[in-house]
Image (cartoon, rainbow, N blue to C red):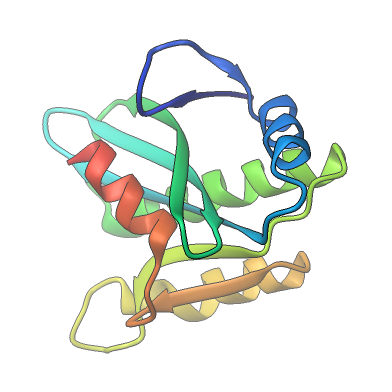
Length: 150
């Protein structure tokens, strides 16, 4: 599974990178946040991000960007965000890396359309043993993904 840094276009295996990063920073308190966001224009673009929260010093972000044919159905497009996050989390787990949290870009407030997915997506994520977070919580991985697809 290939990811990139924000600072260059070189692709790398996400699991190898995470292991190396965590080993290099083994004396620091690092939390990992995983999330995905999508945008529709002429096509649908997904960005899956992995955020390394390095204590009080800030965050380091890596990402995978995918462009697919336009998905006009909101449910299908937003469900694709959860699927991409879970796929990445499982890929990392299979390689000995546990993700702290999967951030889902859905809102618990019924005024938002994404609210329709909250129950199903949180259940999906948590049934696999991951912690799920949704808006209005602070979701660093989703905000990073929004910046990349925006």
